[in-house]
Image 1 (cartoon, rainbow, N blue to C red):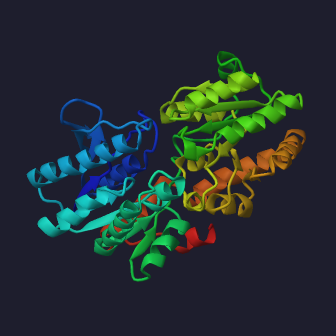
Image 2: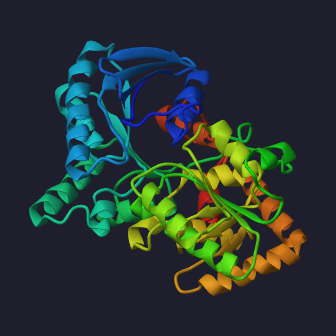
Image 3: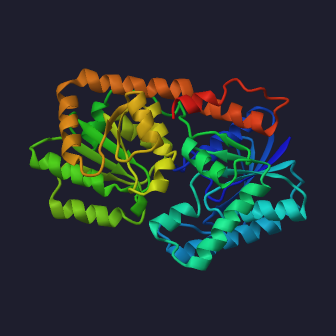
Length: 407
């Protein structure tokens, strides 16, 4: 079976960032599927590479997290346009597997179904346009109306819909209960991320000490609320703690965060450049807890953040700043603590308890790794996707109930 996988922001583990599509596509190839993938890149011309058995087409479509609204819209439109030019030139696939964001990739599916009679499965990573509307990035009434109609049309015409969290699935089913929605969450690469003792050489290399350490590895945008981690660091310093706060990543808010840390003279906050998955694992290896945060908007409670699953694989305790699916997992499986709005002092007190009772922290860490091993491995995700694409040849080994039970 030939699958044409479309993901505008495809990344490999060496490049870092969201590598879900890499692992899913690679896993499908290993199960006998033929996979071609179309993505965008910052190069000047079209390029083609073979990566782990995946034929990857790189379209010259620049994109950066620091782009403004109209720059992003332009990049989305150019990618759709170039995909429409390329797809008819390729050997005909049996199916398109299209992942968002952005929602505009759905145009490709609608076009391919109508013009080429090729069915598509649509994967929903984040709720568009609901997320940018709640963030305030889209305010025009007519544009909002058009985008919500487009969203419903994309779902209606899809052969199946893949949601990355129970919350996303519930939202889509509210639009139409008849939509065929399957849940395949993000996952941990248990070979890439694993529990490890703090490396003394790495601590010395980065000028760190063995005290309680909290790490954040991910995007540094407005919706990521990493400023709340800086607020926690401020309290810790005021209380005379030597706790360390490690921030790895890039995004529109990085300079603002750095200036805030400098202004507050926070000596225990350390910034690291955006890195590969290996570098993220190295960072988590010298941390005790992972910080998982989003801005306090209802739509962001549905997220299935990669950084959370990386932390599970690495066996880290979790600090979550918002209620939602991740919060429920943390509480149900005793993975760590919460740092909810207005309760920063309570969060600090909980961290003091962990500092004084390292066995409790160790229990959180062990629970994180166990949850990853039992429910959220890349192998589980590949099995579910293979069954979704070709049910006859790929009987499921694990049912939907595991995701419902953890929700």
